[in-house]
Image 1 (tube, rainbow, N blue to C red):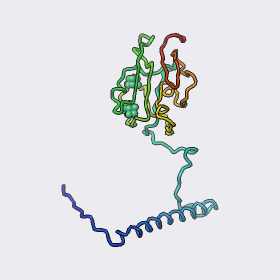
Image 2 (cartoon, helix red, strand yellow):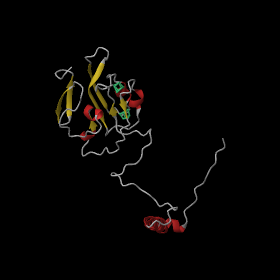
Image 3 (tube, protein in one colour):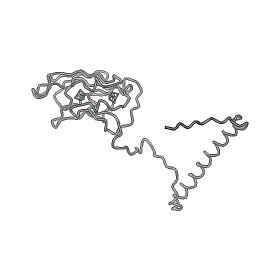
Image 4 (cartoon, rainbow, N blue to C red):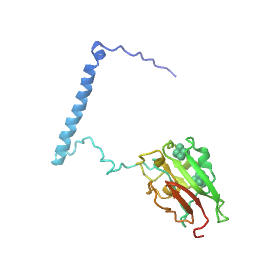
Length: 202
Ligand code: SF4
Ligand code: SF4
């Protein structure tokens, strides 16, 4: 393969002064500003519709359309009866390069299901959104298709999703009560929870 070599040219006297270059940048910005101002005004009057003006979206009131493969906030998928599909195999926790998944598996009362996640946490402040956890899961139990982009929080702790937020992506901290529909006993304290199958339904 032929390699092309380029030599960087020296800056001219005017380029070394920087100020002319700054003025050039401002000229380009001002050109776009007045062009778009004029075109948006003309569009309002029903004129020059064939000439597109620069557009933006009014985020967060208006959300961008996402590609189908876009990786957004995680969720845990559920079976028909509302229990998590996760069988606590720990593959996602093991493969996660950021080590931001914490799972505590428990014995499932159904002998056909080996385990379930008593605890399932993902620290979004550490997650690198690689999607490995989704790819490795043998049960299709975790997905990154919620379309939720708004992950900002006031503290690092608020960025740690627990099983409630993962099974119901609409939930955000602080959590007031256990919202899980399957017979899962929870003790919620300051966003932390402990769970087991004991003591709630069957
Ligand atoms: S997307 Fe990647 S970094 Fe984030 S939890 Fe999944 S495996 Fe870990
Ligand atoms: S989410 Fe999937 S990979 Fe992770 S522990 Fe559950 S079943 Fe295993």
